[in-house]
Length: 99
Figure 1 (cartoon, rainbow, N blue to C red):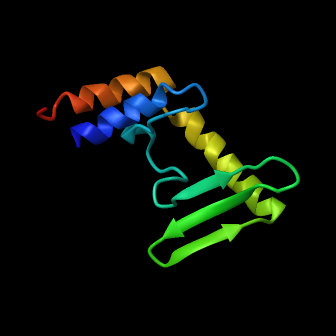
Figure 2 (figure 1 turned 45 degrees about the vertical axis):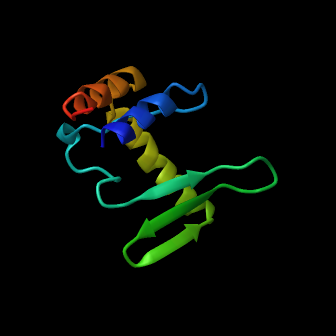
């Protein structure tokens, strides 16, 4: 676990990466039981949503679906800790595990 948390902090330092932790105190939120990834590409490929769950995985490409998940992602980002505090929290949790 310690190695995994170290890797997260290491990846968070990459300039084009953003790591944000959603605190438990946020309560119910769109990411609680819904794993999704927003896939954005260079033109002409349109964005898509990749959803993975116990039943399998699907891609959503309709503009209305993509916008609904963009809104959910915006909500998650707004409720999450900022990147610096997220990395600090992960380091604090990491330090609880033996080396």
